[in-house]
Image (tube, rainbow, N blue to C red; front, side, top):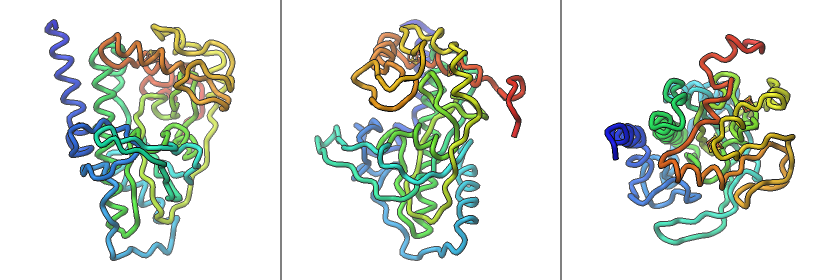
Length: 298
Ligand code: SF4
Ligand code: SF4
């Protein structure tokens, strides 16, 4: 490996360090098992709520407080939704133990959190720095979700912190009003475009859900093909939204632009690191997109 590669790999290792070592104390943990039992760490489901319950007389106040606390712990954006069971994975599979079974999330709400990724680093995609920006996002995710889950449990309510495991974060984030789905298959937020990582905390703490937002992305993406142009393996659709899917890895029946996930991931393997071209190429990913895009400022 050349010197640039050695430095880039070191950068990535530092960026993912918190997720690797704090996400779960199980060294085989990779974050996609579907549930985090018996592994310890910040994503653990095992901690019981405090027996001393904080009375929630005013769910509106509690909702505002949870959002404030999530931001205090490092969230860039926070929204709340009722859990739509369509977005919860049907089964879990623990690679380390071989255990598998039906996955059930009975909690009413998901607090969905977005953490901003560094624009200068994202903009180097598909180079090491962009890969490190994604890796650091994973470290931020586990820190914020784990801390928020601990806060809620200490209030006396159950809480399950979740990164990519357990349920699909993008549809939950859309339901929670954080943004819309773009042609690039990513959540586009008004504040940072697709330049975010997502995590969530499931809970029964009495909260008030947000509503989905419409800031014009479906129309915008119809004429903008910047992400499709940037993709080295043509994994992003050029045509209209469809309910059909290009790969066995995609889910049928939802009207949207679907990224050919298999083709994308095979490119990551070939590239030796992740790729974020379709994130960096999106005009909504630039810093402060509303300063130059003709959309209302909030
Ligand atoms: S991450 Fe890279 S390979 Fe995957 S869809 Fe985006 S641009 Fe294409
Ligand atoms: S690059 Fe353009 S088409 Fe692609 S997601 Fe962003 S706005 Fe939509």
